[in-house]
Image (cartoon, rainbow, N blue to C red; front, side, top):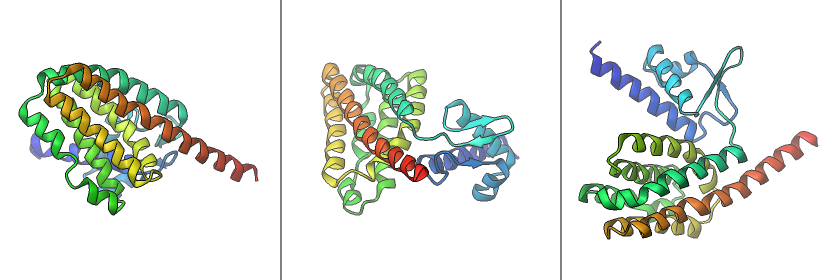
Length: 229
């Protein structure tokens, strides 16, 4: 098998398993194994093993001796940690993006939310999360710094699990307001206004964790009541 074909298979396995984790197809707290993932996603054992190794380095799965491979739970501490890190790193990069973003970068940011109104009306939450991923990848690429790009994407992958958990519990106006906040980020970047870009990115990243914290706390309380009942 050619080197490029092997790399493509590894990338496909990684992307499929990553999306299954983000969208809860591999549910939080669940255990899995390499053979099951090969049956489910194909690609061969080597590709799945490589994907799991990469995902474990990124904190999206846990691999423990005698326990196996497990998808991390969605917890309040993890929520706080990932959004605090994103606010510092991505928020801190906003001025850099306002300085460096090309016309193509800005076009990619604007195109990320094409047809978002239709997705909101249809409650197509997977598409809305994919739009958000496309937007933040465009932000990451516009830093023109491969280390910053890698960190932004990895943190966003983790936070996308919380976003998918939370967005399904928000009303349409709250989702619409969140996307409009992202569009204000783009406007600031297009104007080369670094301070405004920083302010708008931090506003986008700052409000959502509180919503999810309330949803998570309610979910955890219900779980505890079920167990204790």
